[in-house]
Length: 293
Ligand SMILES: CSC[C@H]1O[C@H](OP(=O)(O)O)[C@H](O)[C@@H]1O
Ligand SMILES: Nc1ncnc2[nH]cnc12
Image (cartoon, rainbow, N blue to C red; front, side):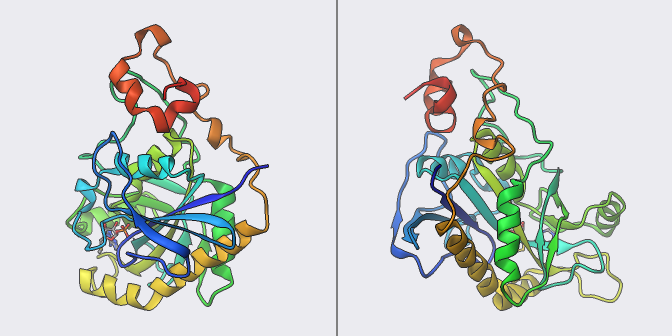
């Protein structure tokens, strides 16, 4: 039996987390470059918690410029087992309304200007992304949110666009036709990298707008996103606190989806062909299988 270390990636409007005992901001170095910010580390009810503001505390890094690899690497270095992302999204359907939470279970990755893998050169690996979300963590987070006064939709496909501009009307309509439920700019490659680093990942998508497809509602703007987030950022934080309380009373068993052993059958480069420099950068992410220090 193991223990949980919860990593929380706070998105737009969520730059800190209270109620963490002995909480302190700490710098964690990564061979993948600069993460978005320091991490805020502490405990609550005996559970280790590591918070990282995705865009930095001053929201100064836009989605295309985030160093997703460094962010995931530093969480791995902090011993994080499970990552909960809190993200603002636009809704692509009538019944997912601003203020609602959506427990995303699938992604469509339409981003094109980001580093998406730890295994690009020198050591090649291919992990499965068939089920990109940790079902157990998503289920627990949904239960944690259900304890609060918020509508929680269990399931949804999140279309990840490059941004930073919002979608055109034609794009918004196309994504609706594809059966996507919500749209945002950040959860890929985050979820892919978490999977490569053998950490569970789930996201609570906080609906802030109807993008631009809805004929009777305002089109998305930063102003209306922040307005909604002002009202429900506390519900996001409350969900995290409830989740921590749940984690405090159950041992962590290995993921039924085999997430902590995802690299066992993923690396294709034989040991004799692996590049030393690449190996050294993979010490945290893949040290378990590559036996590098
Ligand atoms: C401020 S609106 C657009 C911005 O909000 C979302 O970010 P996050 O997922 O970090 O909450 C969206 O993906 C965009 O980056
Ligand atoms: N409509 C939208 N499109 C992309 N990212 C968003 N974040 C919040 N609302 C969004």
